[in-house]
Length: 259
Image (cartoon, rainbow, N blue to C red):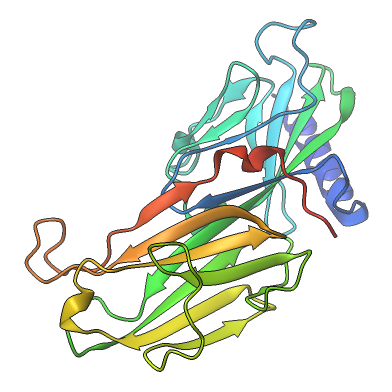
């Protein structure tokens, strides 16, 4: 693809970001870190050109557009792009999602001469991730688990349970919200950064105990990630950091975020 064409793509992509708002046709995908994800391209041409030859995927999280797929051709210039592939339906597949992958992805249809064929199809990728204040876990230690939803543009969320928007909750193995009156747990949250933290002192019986963080929209669970306490010396990790069991809610691709 010519340098001029790349410049044109960048200008149009940036213009759509600066002037557009989240529309009713935009797709919002919620995924936990470490999972594989498929981002749908809802404006793909399936009958005019061979196998996604008109499809270009761009990505933005910091007001700078980056081309990932150019006219159906996968780019392998960086380690990040080596995790990308184009599906037969022109969807964008990303392996082993990291917290740096969150942001806005947009699928575009172009001719080789630089004429845009259809309006952009925009996909917002939200990534859920747990981090721990301790690298070595043992009974008697105080540990803080921080669950964060990475989103661009930044969304507001909390654990208040108000209807409508996006919320983060800590739940037990049975999926029941942790009791706020339980003196074992101290919780804190930052709604503007979409973070909810859980602090507790580990007990002997906490070995293999799971604490799960869920992200919901309204009454629907979009994704969840689980922290499991492991004792030192277990073959899964000599430091017994955490065993992250990431859960991908399969039907989240079709959900639309309400303003």
